[in-house]
Image (cartoon, rainbow, N blue to C red; front, side, top):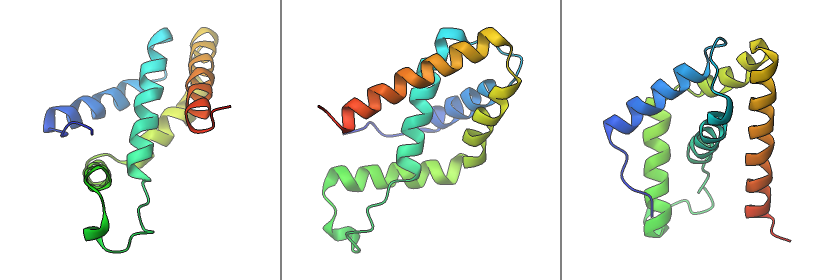
Length: 117
């Protein structure tokens, strides 16, 4: 089960998104952690447990994840996540390479996690 999200976690996430949308940054290998964080935010924000219409039918894990998703949706502008990707086109060559390499690594990890062979 995920830990509870506190205000300091939301503030740190907002700060991370602001740093990541700055086209003049040089995060290089840090992009892996940032993209992983963005992926987790995306998971919770887009979590769809609508197959169980009544929240009383949710198990504790699903209920907790739904609560985290609701909290993130209310605290973080989803356009900021999209902005990270659109601003990546403004990065210098080395930063684009680092960004794309880390994006591919996280994508491969998630693919293998959800579609093991």
